[in-house]
Amino acid sequence: DIQMTQSPSVLSASVGDRVTLNCKASQNINKYLNWYQQKLGEAPKLLIYNTNNLQTGIPSRFSGSGSGTDYTLTISSLQPEDVATYFCFQHNSWPGTFGAGTKLELK
Amino acid sequence: QVKLQQSGAELVKPGASVKLSCKTSGYTFSTSYMSWFKQIPGQSIEWIGMIYAGDGGTGYNQKFKGKATLTVDTSSSTAYMDLSSLTTEDSAVYFCATGAITIAAIWGQGVMVTVSS
Image 1: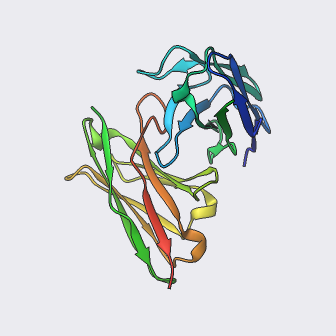
Image 2 (image 1 turned 120 degrees about the horizontal axis):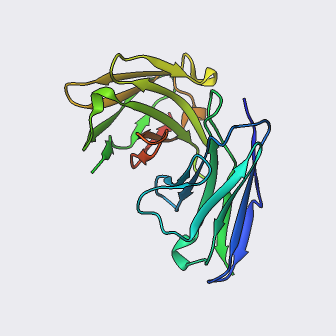
């Protein structure tokens, strides 16, 4: 199975900060990389699909980039409601696999 | 609007089986894929498998073969997952999810399964 490594595991940032979350795959995943936001006690919510496509209804402060094995989720200006855990998910190879998550906190 | 409504929390004894449901609305179920996921609270997420509602064709994560069985009822637009021979390691939240643009675009609310004697 493809291993997905997210960094950092915990990120503390202030409102208004530009925040970057990283996800590294153990092999090329051809941009088949989704990002999900999960708040405590809720289901994951799709933010970005296939590296850089913004899901309908998601604020434009969220963006994604990457290729090959390295991918990034960027929040251009952190808002209080962005406090959550963020997971990357590769669906290039069976079975799809998730990273361990990055917990985003307010400083 | 697409909605996935999962059944309620389950408390089951070790060795028993449980059947979880995911009732859908707002889209054409019969030509869609449904995936199921497992998440132990505080941990990451695992993909259990996927079913195509059109013909019931399935694909499973090797880790869950023999543990999970996916089925659908197109007459009620509902997907099901049977979990068998339950142990404490099966205690988790289970999600169903579907999507047209990508796998797992829309998720159900999740159902907690607790395995305890």
